Length: 504
Ligand code: ATP
Ligand code: MG
Image (cartoon, rainbow, N blue to C red; front, side):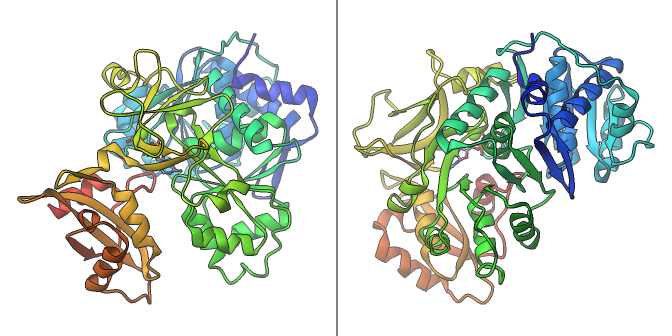
């Protein structure tokens, strides 16, 4: 019996065959159709020698084919490996090599990259996604040629469903080994905490190869039998069009996406009446953004998580979002969080400690990384997030920063995220990052790197005074540099290691 993700299309086709599962570029497919395609694809891939435990990689932007490949892998008991399209060919080669993928399903725009990768791994089979059954070796041809008869391979909750690579913010990306059970329990957390229904129409315009988009919106919507509307990239105009035309009920994004929407000329006129949930993750939502949305009658739910938790860990409800600015919330229903000081003890209320996470959504390790797995879990199975947080009397958590970004200046801990948040309060600041750099007197001191809004006015002396009025002296960066752009990694996070290299 298939107890994993691969069984979802057939289960949905059994209960709600005529509901719309996916919408992409105006084409809709029902759960009945999704089920037929997924089983044909599974049969086609099986015919090419793929089966239980084999890794099936996918390279491309949001597209129904990505979801069909994920489910087809689940039908076979194979492992789905979504690749980040922003990685360079060498980085992709590393992931393909480590995961040992036998097939690469790729978008047509990535044909050259796919061919370059096959030169390095001659055994790699390529399948090109194009809406064209005539394309030999193509995704549609594979589906058209194979029987849609359901396959029923035994798949257990403990079997690996996905290898999802972390963002690589603190080092080489690690493949989180997400089991079917992990993904299902995370989806259940979201259904329970966000209160999803079968009438959800969810906009997917952030990349599905990130655990946040896949785990916090896509899979929970499909579990409930709602509709996912796929957009290949985030575009302000297209987002307003889709919200209005498709009557989107749930939108997910990072703060910069919601910020861009609210700065558009269409913001005040757009019909946003269908939106029930705005889910925002990856960083705290700035107060100003919360205010702009609440003027339009909209409130954010905020989330904190990580790839290793499939990914939901903390959630702040829409009601709490307006009262508890800067908080990340309370643990997801089936998950638990505890804080630990460096000496292993529990910090007092309001005092910082590392976030440890446990629950049925938390992976049991990384793919082929025994040393990193051993370092990241306590003996009793709690995952060490590497993030520092505080918790208040009511159980609300606030993420302080990453342990690796923290530095010590004159014996005092400085959390760059706190300084960055103050810089963001300055109206001229578009982007900012702070790193610790060596200093003969203080051990380390802060160095701020700031991007000013186009047309904004700020000089470094004034920014320094702005910070000095709001922060303790040891937290105020000793120097501030203005730049056009911050260095970012493949998932859009600021590359602090690169900044430290550049500025020391
Ligand atoms: P790597 O583990 O490879 O260094 P990464 O940790 O950035 O990269 P992800 O799993 O994509 O990879 O990101 C999870 C991290 O993102 C968390 O550990 C945390 O540092 C940060 N994060 C996520 N949500 C929030 C939030 N709401 N507020 C602050 N930080 C957040
Ligand atoms: Mg991490």
